[in-house]
Amino acid sequence: MDSLRCVLTRLETNGAALGHFNVSDLVLLKAVLGAATEVGVPVVVGASEGEREFLDTCELGTLVKSLREKSGQPVFLNADHTHSLAKAVEAVKAGFDAVVTDFSSLPFEQNVSHTKEAVEALKAINPSVLVEGEIGNIGTGSEIHDVVRNEFRTLTTPEEARQFVAATGIDVLAPAVGNMHGMLKSMVQGKEKKRLNIERIGDIKKAAGIFLTLHGGSGTDDADFRNAITAGINIIHINTELRVAWRQSLEDSLNRQPNEVVPYKILPPVIGSVKEVVVSRLQLFSAQQRPRSEGSTNTGSHGLDRQDILGDGRGTMRRLLRTDTL
Image (cartoon, rainbow, N blue to C red; front, side, top):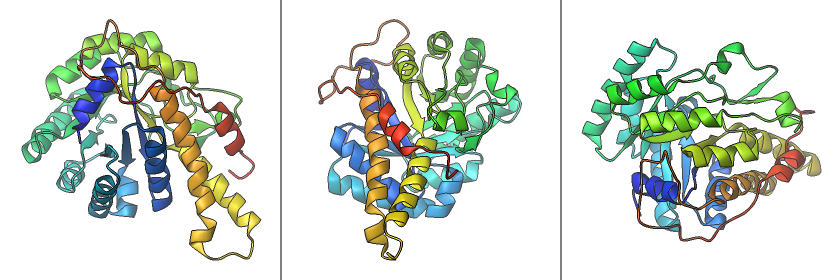
């Protein structure tokens, strides 16, 4: 299997992005892997510190490795939003392919210092691991919110990105470009979409010169996703959309079978509903598949094995995501 860096380079050359989906149980993991297999594209399984604590970091690493070897599917594992060096080291030793070292809540210089220390320590353990750093405030929880807090409206500047990348040696940068973790209730209802600053993404890409990640992708306008990929986004994180689909479909399954107590009879519809959301997002992120123009810095020589895939997923989310149970 190609390395994560090679996959990202190939996708960037072909105008596509890599979908990243967080998991916190086997239902979500089976849905993500099933969707990636169906669509025929690589995928990243992500787990935050809280999700790794629930699943166990080493056990998740072993499970994903086993499923990857069994299926032959290019599946990568990312330690999402890691706030300490010890937790980052634990993930790399457990076989994770990438780590998000998130010290973005600290002042800029401290963020630089902690991130640089993490890059050096993690590369000493595994030189091929990709280390991501984050600047800007996009919140911390993949949850449902009432309003957008004012601090989420402050965007990362190209100069901050340039300085941060040069000082830390990270492989991937996560900027604040109009994105935020979680979704507003109005987004869950389908009444509102997140909107990204596409021009700022392009400017940051030129200044940083490395792979870019879009965190907090749930609820984002489909056209903005496509334009963000063209502007330089390489990895897109989706979590809240999966969590809402998981909860809604679980409640529906229990309501349809009020006397059922067998998990393997209750949970298959949940897997199917979450998988449908993941499929729609993977199709959207893979749909462009055309060479990037100005602003792209990582190039490769191979196209995607799969032909263009079209889809936007709006119907899926509007059908699955309801607020009457939130």
